Length: 259
Image (cartoon, rainbow, N blue to C red; front, side, top):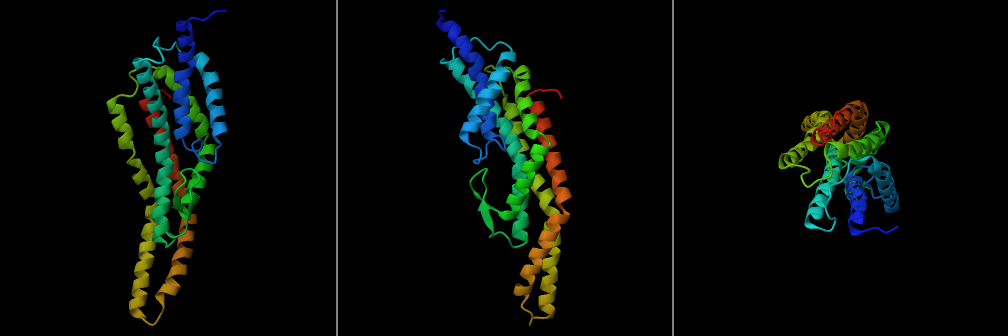
């Protein structure tokens, strides 16, 4: 059996461009992008999903993979995959931001540990929220929904030079503000309560200057902070669930996938 250049280019395009979009999503999406996930596992998942999805896709554009048109198409697939991971990373970033604000308000800003997902130092409170968010993401089947969404996107946004528009990119960037909104919604109840506690400590210090308010106030602030974290966990889970739902709805709208 002899293959000519056109047949080989058609076969290569049928698998290369879907693989690029899928691999870009796996590199950027939460959980799969963690440094604790071996690169060989990500490579295996990328190849497996591509082999399962590629035969069901519509015909790919007849463009040379090594041409200028093929390069533009390649960039579009990378952009689409990274965009999906970026939106979901903002949801997890909201919890990290809220955890950092809570940690600083209760005096635990100095207690940091390495975030295995990003390799940077974050307060232990933020890491606690991040671990819970990862478990909730798995419980809600967020990883399966992400794979289903990227597979459906090939029908609604086929492989072509005109992928994401400028307005779509601006909407993605604007959605990043939800990181700060969600983080404040998580941290605001605890920060408000800790502010009242600090004001009470100031009144006590003015009324009884002989008390060593620093040795008394610090453990009280920490214990109250932990109690407030426990009490407000349902609120944090609710905010995370709403942000995750908004993120998937935004992705479906951007990729023109109907639920």
